[in-house]
Length: 426
Image (cartoon, rainbow, N blue to C red):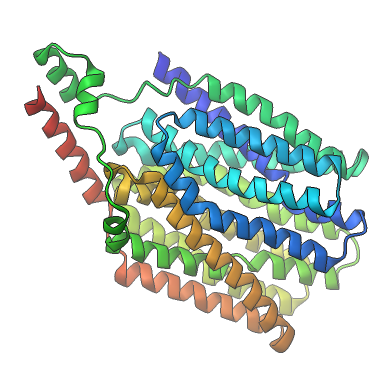
């Protein structure tokens, strides 16, 4: 009963955290522009947030690994995000926005691994794929609904009200977090039997066979970690700039309904993620990780080529159905990153550091994507840029196909070994 309540609370936690993070998307740029910031100043400030997030990935992951109370880490991160949102709403001045961006960057880097660690604590590793798929579904529902709600607030109240709404939506996230009993980790039948035979508590058995932290050097030497990190860089190198380029084309060639088309390009993929993520989580347990990675990565070059065709056809409304492919990639990637992190390092006490490592790789890829795509577009045109992004996506597919090992079997063997170790420990 306690586990069931905790899992339901985790659903709502994902929902409200996605609500909160939605407020730190395109609304910041619109808010600053409305307060007479130049595009250069806005770009610089958004870069501050990106750089602070990249710099915090490994530190935040290691910190969450070191903390025994993962709920406390998540709560601290949510409170920091509330403060960041209130700062943005209070004053659009340089120092205040700078502080808010830095605070939000670090808090987000701590919140992601903390929530992944809570998920892993509530389900067995064998069920983690299903749980991560469910997490992604609730997060997507939250993002889609909140984007519409914040759009209404920004349109009919003020852009500043979006950030006060963001802070308010973080409060139910704290309530949902408080309803999770983080001490209730899943206990396998062998551990129950071992505890009964030895006359000790289940907690003592779990502690006896618990995760033993691996050295950072050993973790970095793991070829699975490095190979998937390279895949992550290529994924974001292909993906990050696509919608920005498409939005720029819409703005340049379409007079009316521009914001509606861009909003649809953001919201429609969330519905795809909502429907697809649980299936991805289930099939990751049945098929393995590699087939689904290939499926999700294949959507990247196809989407880039279709964007190029839509751009040549001068039909902005075609961007919306093309953007549905982003939902496929996002569903696969959103489930696979924490799941592969669990496969590679979850049994060695470095799960959250591993997530931070992959998050850093994502930041590197995204930063290179927007910078290179912008330069190529200025020099050679938007279609050439889309072809370059398609090439990066093709390289990502090739790397997964040729070099990425299957991690599911190794994870299953680790889980079986821990269960087997519990019996002699009795």
